[in-house]
Length: 376
Image 1: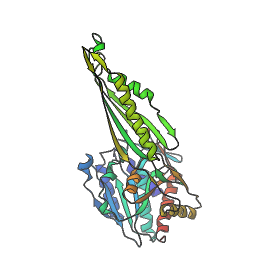
Image 2 (image 1 turned 60 degrees about the horizontal axis):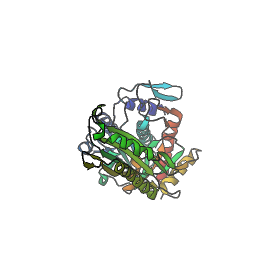
Image 3 (image 1 turned 120 degrees about the horizontal axis):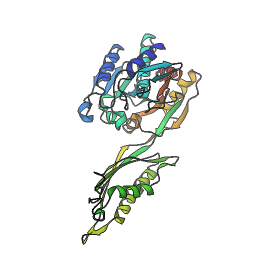
Image 4 (image 1 turned 60 degrees about the vertical axis):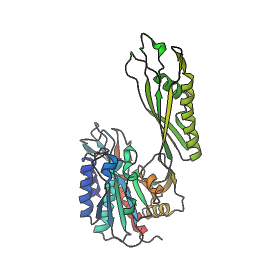
C-alpha cells in the first residue's frame, strides 16, 4: 500500500492548475502505458485553451467494460506544492493547496491498475479517463470524444468519504447580469448619472442567498464594475449560480433572480436633461451541467455495496451538492457514481488527505472491479 502514497507525493509535486496540465498529462500517458494500457490522447487543448489533454487508457479484460475517472487539474494556489506527511495525514506546508482534489483519485486508480496486474486478478475491460479543466466548468469532460469509450457504467474518484457513494448531483444554472447605467462626474454632477453598482446592490439585497431548501442553493459569487471613485459607475457585472436537484425549483429561482434585477433596474429610470434615461439590464443564463440520480437498485450502487461488504464496510448512498465529471458522464449515457478518496478541506490551503481513508479507497475500488467481473 505504501506505493500509492509514494505515487500521490509524486503527483502533487507536478504543477497542474487548470489549463496548465501538460506536464501531468505527459507523466500519466507514460505511466498508463507502463501499466499495460492502450493510451489515446485527445485534441482538447484548443477547445479549452490549455496546454494539457484528456488521457484515455484501455486495459483488456473479460465482460462489459467499466469506467474509472478522475480529473488532473487543481485549483490555485497549486504551484510548487511541498507535501508533508504528519502522522496519518498528508498536507501542504501551508502556502498552497495540497492537490488531493483530485490527484488522490488519480493515485487510487493507478494503484488499482498496478495491483490487478501484479496479482493477476480477473477483471472486466477497464477504461480510464483522466480529464483536464474540471475545476473551471468541467471543460475537459464536456469536450471529451465519447466515441472513444464503450463503457456504460463506472466510477469517478472525486469525493471525501470512502464509505459514502455519491449517487446523485444537482443541475446548475449560471447567471451573468450585465447592468448598464450612466456615467457622470461623481462630485460635480452625480444627479446626471445612474449608478450600476447601486442597482446591483439593491437587487442583491432582495435575493435569497445560501441554502434555500434541502434541494436548492444560490450564491452571488463575483461582482465587477466601476471606473473610478469620481465617476458614477456606468457598468457592473454580477455572476450568480443556482443549483438544485429539482428542475422546477431551479428554473423558478433563476427566473426570480433575473426578474429582480430587471424590476430594480426599472426603478432607477429618471429624467436627465429633459430626457428619460432607463438603465439596461441583460441577464445571460447558461446551463452548466444537468442533474443525475442513480437508484439503489442500479448496478453502480450494488457493485459498490458488494465491494464494501467484502471489506466489512457498509456503503451508504448520498445525493451530492456539487457538480463534477460524473454529471456529464451520466448526461452522455454512462452511469457514474462518485467514490471518496479521503481528501478533506479541499480548495483551501488547509487541504489534507487522511492516509488510512485513502488506502481504503484503493481497497474498495479494487473490490468493485473484481466484483464487476462476475456481475451481470
